[in-house]
Length: 150
Image 1 (cartoon, rainbow, N blue to C red):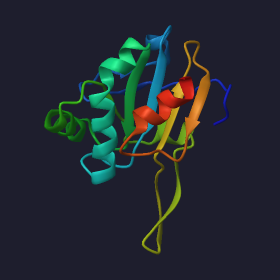
Image 2 (image 1 turned 90 degrees about the vertical axis):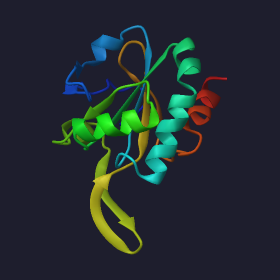
Image 3 (image 1 turned 60 degrees about the vertical axis):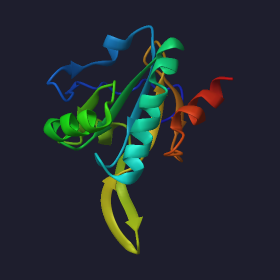
């Protein structure tokens, strides 16, 4: 996904069954972050950082949306456990994950497998890709994003 490209449509449900579309966020920048799995160490750090800085992000005109292949039921538990104030989309068929290039071959401890890449996109107010973070700092993703807007 290149900067300046039209961001692919979302069109999938969040933890409550609400379908999200990019048009729902016209006039806001969207922090769209892809992560491998609910309630794992790195994913929890990342989500909690977005939670801890959510008010600041909203005040600066950003909406935050997380996406993984976990089910809505798993998202409900994850959100409840960590009091996350933003939606998590349940892309169980990996359509949006693949459309954003967040799926592919990964290596972990010498083993190769297909999985979700940890990548964050900032989509501008008109639905264009404005920033791409493919080396996400899981403990401080908000600072990583906001540093590019200083």
